[in-house]
Image (cartoon, rainbow, N blue to C red; front, side, top):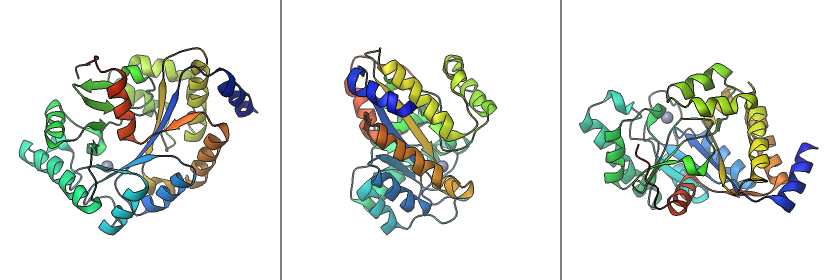
Length: 275
Ligand SMILES: [Zn+2]
């Protein structure tokens, strides 16, 4: 019923756009099932894939990565999935440069997006990504949605996320935002919290709809996660139900991470937020 009301509003009154993007990390074999599910609902995504990963059992084979790249964007996630802030500059440089070359050889496509393992990075890692030729980086910051607040280092775009396909506690979101001194993001999202990821995401989308009716400003919803967690925590059904409801509502612009970054770059070419 709520969605029906929203749909009518979207068709008649929506003044701001809502961009919808997804990203999934670690290159588990379950990514193939996920890629097909996303394609079924015309949802675009970016898959961040390391060559090897100590704790990621069942990595995709190279031919499977090639298959996946025909449906969605593939992004760099280092070669061996180290925490970049815990390795030497020399290793971090090799991890960033080599994963781009490796994925370009595997997919035959330009690789533009990067995601640092467990979201840990420093300014020098941003510089290395730019030097390697990446044009955007996804972080693990959550609860963000304003296109205008996406940070850039010159034309390099730093994309935070909104919600994770994972049942987080309120405390997890609090810690996620506090670590980054994002008190405003946390407080403004406080009334949207739900320990069920699907309910939380729907609350967030409802909030974005309501502001899209009155504000010219465009917003995004960035859903991220790990395909292996979908199996481990029995989340496949809820994800399928969520995508189905997106299709029924309509009114979204579906983009992969690079497309969203490009839009941010073009939308505010003169804004150079220092990171
Ligand atoms: Zn990872």
